[in-house]
Image 1 (tube, rainbow, N blue to C red):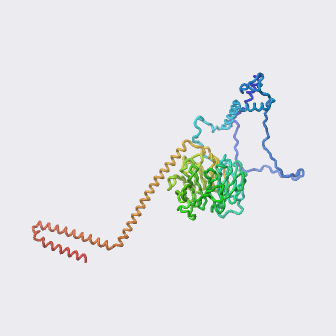
Image 2: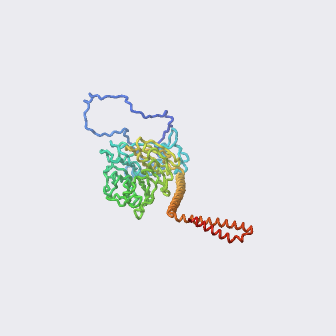
Image 3: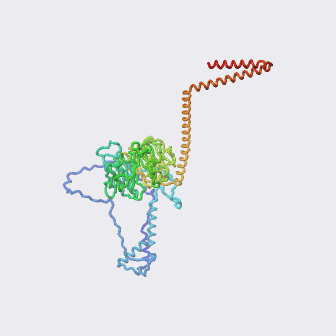
Length: 616
């Protein structure tokens, strides 16, 4: 009957029923511990059984641990209910449907797949599956509240910052080399390119491999691809516009690029006579229409611009001479580079001497390309990166500290970490949180800093390995990061959600912090400038006084004559004073008129005698 067919159809759509049971009802939880292997039984081979077997040539056999299964569907009867919107006759058969007509059957099947009821059913099943995946029936720590509120900015989590090791990728060669540079695949971040090199000058063994590798992060046993340069790679970078292209800087100063679709050999290399003279420590892709422009930096004191379509020679060159004369002998060795796509004409260079050189590529003359320098470190600047949220502030990692700078303050950094016992060898900002940055040290420790949480100590300090950590690179989502060690071990770590989730009002608070520290440093800089001016004026005044004293020693006769004139003036004044007093007394006695003439001659005589006597 039609009624029976319709009810059978509705019951058919109930294809999933979920059985749930709390974790606490399964009994005691299994606790696994790490312990060495134990030998329970040792069965020795029986040589007598060898005669029962026939030796075969080696052959490859694929074995699956899971049982092979397949899914089959059978449509026993064709029917259509009123809910599908197709006219039907008594008995449930569509009017215009012939089961033996293949084209009609295909059209009918497509219509059923697009039906709204079918889609709603699938969405209902997906909702059940999502709910099953999210819930944790043991403690239910992932329970979500207030889902109707804005989920774009997640509130600060109460969980403690942490990180765990996901995978470890080891250098497959017997002679271990340093993992000098890491780079994530731009599409999907499922691959990690690692450059291997030995930076100990003239100490590399003769049998050392030159190969670098591309790893699949889910397969640590074997690299996915091998890159074969003519000299060990010191740096390696993916092209952000074409994920098949990589460019690398070699230990001998050459630049090479690879197309992974063409194999392990370089697609093209720079000529040795037009390349760098020292190892290339950094290569960066430029923002261009073609997506083929790069620039490189080396400790030979040069920054070179290249087009990978023509690698015979660089199309632009800059010598890092602080005197702006272009003298390569006085150039500063470059070990790090920074280029922000939002500032296409500006770039920054970190040098071996601890200076950060700010440059303008579009300047008219080579001397004008070097704009200013920032000094504050005592050793080579291994890492230099602008904050992805506030490009005017940048991070430097060198010697024993990491420092945060503002472009407006050139005398000093606005924030810095404490001095560590071990050297810092690399660092970078978090791409998703403006207040978080990472540093790695020579003692194998990874430090995670959250300057909103505390500034004096790292938020998380993790001992990754026993050897020095030389490189670090964070994935674009901020959750995974890779650390390269001195012995070629690359450790893949996953940080907790609190360190890779943007907190509420975090941008505003970090902006306010940077502005406050910048204003404070400006006040201190103005005060120091005023003190320097006072010291300079004091020194100039003291030099003038010394000059006057020197002039006085040369004109001694003038000083004696002036002293003599002053002495005679004083004597004349005293004599006049005495004469006036005596005259006043004589007048009082009434004899002033008789003695005026005589006293005048006596006074003149004494005065003349005294003058002659003193002159002699």
